[in-house]
Length: 498
Image 1 (cartoon, rainbow, N blue to C red):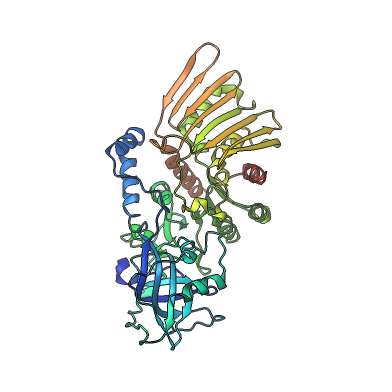
Image 2: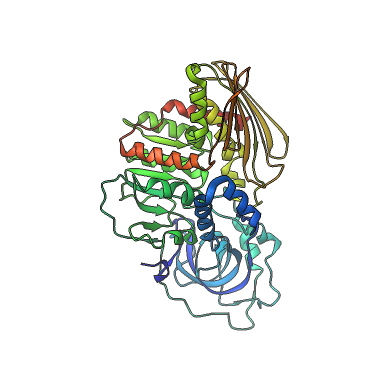
């Protein structure tokens, strides 16, 4: 069954949202500065090819190709009809309404809107002529709004701003024919018989398409994918045994052995807790949580479970560079490991979801990788001292001291060249030896006499190794991560609070 056999729409929460069909747009414009969109460049492809190889480049290109429709989000005002509405609202099915649509797909004739973005058109009112209309400053600040962002809405402000597009009826109200109501928020498909553990995936972004899907299929049977953006689901259109769902929450009547969680960061912990309550294994993309309250709830659930199984997907634990470090450290594996690093992040578009209030700072979004790796190297020794300095904008420097004597420093910045994307320089110091890891692909180890070890690896191989090893471990009834590993998440939140 193809997706275009009936329209896949975003799910409705039933409390704050209404389903509205579009009759006519009054004004519409593209939403800009929301997604990372790379320019078409031979040199960009060449640089990636040299670093990650042809297969990984093709995988990335395929993922980005399926994001072209997702990137065409629009905002504007339209008139239409209510198809479904919350019970406690003044809206009801069949009402003729004027709506402001924020951050919606340009491919759809049916939209899910917060009830504050909808006003009924009374019989004595009509819509202002479309000629010369534009989105007002009062509404413009909401063009990228989504319920997942954490940005508040003001009902009165929105109502007054939308009402300005109506006037006293001197001519009949603009009414168009209702569109066909052929839509659904999910596409159910038959399950494929398999001896592999069954799985559900939450979030079908570029990360899932390039890192998760290609590397779990040998050991895991993926049966369902939840992705709130219908445009993203087209990536799996030809996968006849994978059901597709735009709900951000699980179906209560369905159970799976494994939950792969890779959606918006602030949604990770709630889904992971639901997985553990179901007795499933939770495989969680970083970060595990974004707030201390989420951390406490997740930790409580892990402690209450008889056999909790979770895997935190910090790829540096699985990198070939780490294996080289362990090999070259030899018999000094219990000694404290100092870690010093400089991390460059690409500047994000101003409306990117990493900048949402719900996503936290760049320390939570990305800095958690290096914090976790330091704690991992030192067997999650107790933290005895932390410091944070923010010299400019979102740039920051953090320092950590552990009970075992290990010391950590990290500088996070987005000032510099974007030629190769995210970059890092790491020095590990232990047992009289310095180990250097650069950009996730180069490694060297030197003692007092000489550089005695050098290597170069594919930087994306760490993600492939991670999901391959995790899925294999799950298939072999592995126990997952130790609860002690949550100390790195606690450290991240403690630094965030400074």
